[in-house]
Length: 557
Image (cartoon, rainbow, N blue to C red; front, side):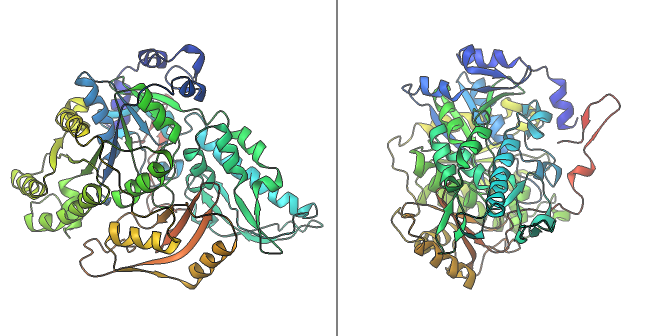
């Protein structure tokens, strides 16, 4: 059966049954139909004195076209921990329509490890991303209207982009204001995908409504004739934008196929944003359960690094255990084996590819100081010899390996992993979390530290444009001394070249752009060829997504 058929074959519990199990009073619940709801952020405030549970971070090796199943493992692990008699909850990101109709075709897990209702979650859900899109584009409309109506703020350069939650490469660079109306001036503009918008980053990092509005007001929309920054609050846009986000800011709750709770809230990209679900959903999970399982997007060099250096740094959160997900097939791919030959046993390619996994383990365990286990999403064609080789290599590093079968068995297929992770959570509870740089370091040093320590790069290299942008940021007189860096690079390699999988030779990270996100309170660093508006693949998933004669959605997986 397909994922969507499996999801439909299992009867869902009413969402009120899920919230009652978590002891959430009815007055804090706003239902969106029978199977999904929002939890008022006032409830989080009411339980703020409650002790936190343990935080488990799910990450992975550098992703491959084969898919590693990180979300599937996260869901299976939550079900597995619950099966062992513990109280576990998920805290995941919301899927973006761009990847759903692009290459992914869905992002709610797979097989018997899914969150449901999967069609709703993958599509419009509770409208959060639409609200973010509207808030973003309201600011664009206010900017251009202000200029049209006389430009009292003397705005000379607009840097704020519009957004849409679809993959549409034609919108990367556009020209606006071509109607020839009196007083209308044309200018170059562009679109980001909504999940790469600064609004999404702010939405996921804000701690309450007051903080949300403050951050929105601090967005830099452009520069005036004196080359001084102009803020969203200067346009009096922050109030209306916050109003559009008010309801969306309440975390969403759904369930796994096994009827366990899942908070799904916020969805920033991990190669061009910080790749973690909302801070308030993570904090809520920690108050509601013994174990909160959360996920950071793409490989550990991107998602996990940003989870720690941005999210944990700014919130005081600390993972009690980390699971690094991989597959035997993906490891062989990283070792140089072709996709056409990937199911054939080849210990030489596997041995080479394990180096990618070991580098991530080194980063997580030795650099950040975290307790790490490896979860292998098991396939039928994985051989005993391949598994034995991997076990031997991990044993040398004193790292636990668990073979999971969550796609086929749900939580039962993750019970071994669940036991290992629970044991890891008990280790070194007072151990300090290490960051890759200090708050007071220069932007250049922050970038260099991540590039050298996490990616293994020889050094960094700035383009002329990046040098100019760095100078502009430093001359803006905005206090950025404690802003972390959010490096946007390819997810497929430790380098900024997606084809350089082995990274055997020395390499540099090429910095093309540096963008101050003053509302999000971090600095985006574009490395290599990364676009903030993705394009569709040659055969997009949209071609297989359809609706049948009975009105059922088909093709989402």
